[in-house]
Image 1 (spheres, rainbow, N blue to C red):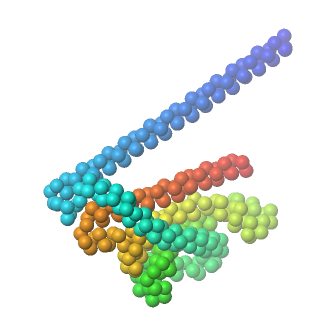
Image 2: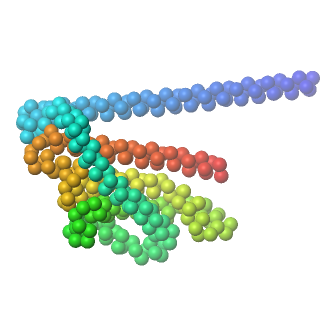
Image 3: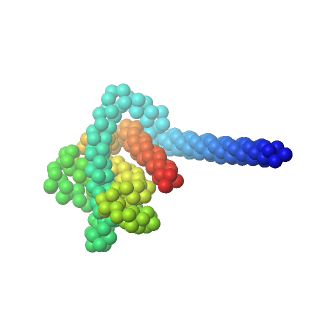
Length: 290
């Protein structure tokens, strides 16, 4: 009798567990369906806005002429021509070299200095006014000085891009390190963790969202800095193409270059946003494991 009651209880527990699994699975499917529906709605509205922009471009071209606004089809065929004859690929390679070098330098120096300022509050308080002062100054104000020091070519352009992008990365890293989880830091200190391990195994992982956010902002500013450098120094790359087309009033060519710049910025931002989400999930899993 007792054995039968035990078997019945086990069967009921199994049914409850099975029902709980089905409920959890159903809830997960509902959540995934809602996410999918939200993505479709977002894509729909994005395409709708794009169509409105194209229609507005066409309307302005019809009413004001090619000098004010080129037609969408003229921009399209000009883009095809510039891609096929190698004009845009060559310019894109030149711009990407400057942008890439500037971003790598800005990311490396910004993260390292940010860790220093955030990890050592005294140093951070001493240098904070100077960081804010330089950050508040437009990078274009340093162009004459950069030209005197580095000339007009790649080195000067890379320095301008670095100067434009380093401060968002530095400030976000400093804030992330300074606001790292105090419980984790104190726990590591109580176990006698050396300062180096405390930085790289506790504070930096906890500050990753802030660091990645700074990198995303810095990458967008890198594109602006690259264009400014190419406009004000030796004219080359996408910025050089844009200024030459503008000076000749070739508006279809001008817009073709602008669209490439916008696409480049969007791709870089999307890539960094995906990395931000991936590392965010990694932090949650790491904390769950702990």
